[in-house]
Image (cartoon, rainbow, N blue to C red; front, side):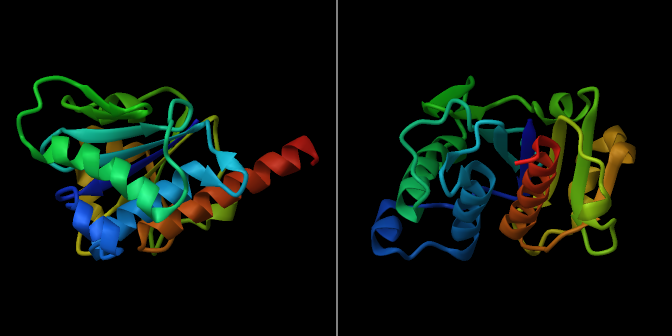
Length: 199
């Protein structure tokens, strides 16, 4: 299983008019590209991937599960429309319980990230200019990559959100742009899987 946790100060707004005009903000486009990088391949969905948009300090998040996802295509409009539905509910502030906004997309009120990262045998990675070469990392069956969605965020502050679990996290040399970091990680895991299966 692959988890991609995107930490953000606040989920970017995606208005229908902006989507129709193809005029999304930089942060909104980054969010869309992260969905594409984490969940889509050229021939279909990654059923073993989960993407989390984690709003720092609020404990609220959007969880997108590849094995349950429906009605979303890999194009910008399809992704942004479904994300905008979730974002409106997340930003409304009156979330009383977990809510499925579309099949495979759930807005979660309670912070489930600690329970994800403390799972046994999880490999916890974060993007770092000074970290290990990704090609030297020994991946496990559960790989968790933590990235920052907003470029102005400091990765050390992002890591600090996970408290006592940070000692288990490994920095890897990945691009500051979250969508590229996700893409490189998926490519490396795919490459290893192909070597193992001999395809």
